[in-house]
Length: 68
Image (cartoon, rainbow, N blue to C red; front, side):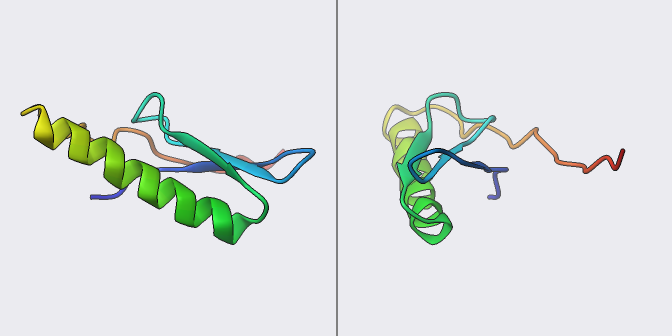
């Protein structure tokens, strides 16, 4: 399963969130660190769905770049 992750540079490092999984977010000092953390957060979140007997949310978000 693949989910779109938005990574944003902040004043203190980087943050990441997953639009298709509300509440799944993390912060880190580098892009690599935030990628690792968000992957772990997604896995933990999906494990919770599984343990609760809920269906895994579909990935519905896509990304396009618009040049202006």
